[in-house]
Image 1 (cartoon, rainbow, N blue to C red):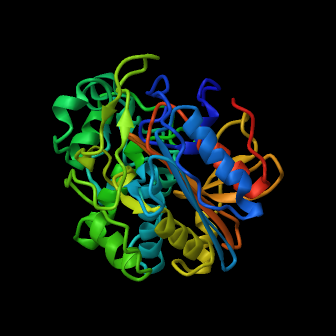
Image 2 (cartoon, rainbow, N blue to C red; image 1 turned 90 degrees about the horizontal axis):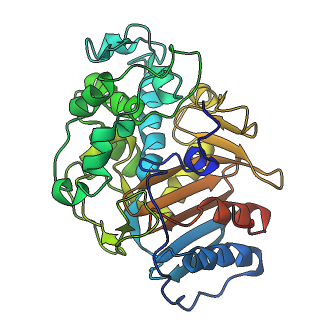
Length: 382
């Protein structure tokens, strides 16, 4: 993997990471909720994000039974938001559950479940396993890297195409027009196509859309009342704050309200909506072993190195591990989609967790609240 990939892209692992430009003029910082001393640095990180141009930031943390919530700028504590690639952990959890039930094997070739789908320009689903989809070692090209797709979906073309519906097969077809990044199993590269395919496998195994499996297997059992798999519904459920984007790589230009969009552009790779409370509930339950048997949990947390430049970061099956500056190890995932950057991280014992969201996609560093919460310091601007 090229060292040119930024730490932010790798840690956020977001759908649109790296496409944005300069900061929106910062609004006045709203009066912050009182912060316990142990969360003062986290609140400071939220306020710093707003000072850097993020319209609003929201975060919640839990440590044992203790709970804390903070906001800065134009946000409400209970806001729902698009979680982007955090969806990947939900999708991977369902596939691991299906394996535990004996309905598939993660070492099955993709071709077994999706015959003829992964073909073209050197891609071959007969040589790629479902496991390699989930840990991004498949080598499959990411459709979100396609220049024409980027122009239509992430650039100014978004304003004309924001309500377009994309079928999963269409997204995969975009990827198949390019050569693979590498031979299966020989390297690591983040590809949203991997998880679109993973969602298609879930549908083939269960006979129902992957979103129904997430709802029935995770959302309902955990009573995640703010979490949804919207499909093609462009609306955001209340309460929410608006989402903003520059729709450009340039450092200037106008700022657009991108709250409404058809999330089929992301599908099983990044379409879900949630809030900070539900995200913590999900990841804490996952790390505590409530959603997967021990054998599957061991497979999920078996990580591969993503880059020699980032020795403290590993990617499991839809789940990332990172060692922070203070030595604390946390597990979780980040996500980016138009006007939204999110992070959820939790300690391996599931006891200390943080979920945060910025409602802009061109500025703000979501790694700072993580360092602040788990290490007690706000890193200097990178």
